[in-house]
Image (cartoon, rainbow, N blue to C red; front, side):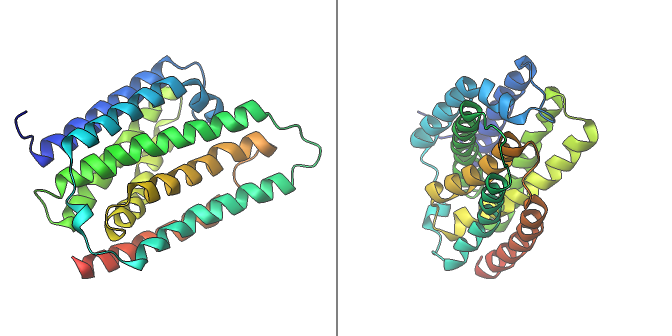
Length: 241
């Protein structure tokens, strides 16, 4: 098989995954803004296919420049925002009173979050960041992969989200991408770690409304912590690379 350039691999993987999500959102009957958990559960088969394709491509491509990075305990700082979100979900459970929980939807949210974590992390960290780091310095590769990750979420507009909310989400997820990307690099290319972080964050985001009809009560605090962590990891990463 002819060798594929790192940039071509990054772009191809990102475009294919983004296109797959665009098709899934377009065909779903649920709204991203109001029925996120139902929307995610409804496209689990698509997420499973995209995740399987991403894992297969990663195993074949064998991108691994970040895998050669020096391990740093700073990578564990990426746990902070996800931990706050999980704590918020626990608070939601304690505050729900007699509210009936839709358990199939709750666990469907978990399954969807897990598949999103696998598919997006393998695609945008394993393939995109790994491929870009073959041709660019690590900081540049991180930045470019975060742009691709942010643009992925522009297709949420197709699921009924407003243009303004979609633009804001693109920016937010690009910053969140910094956390995942630097965690991946500083952990020596540990995909399992970033998949777990991503899954916990998304699950806590999706499941809180299912539990008590409101957004995660600590989402704002997690966001503020996320910005601080993104800055801290970027500073550490720039010093090391």
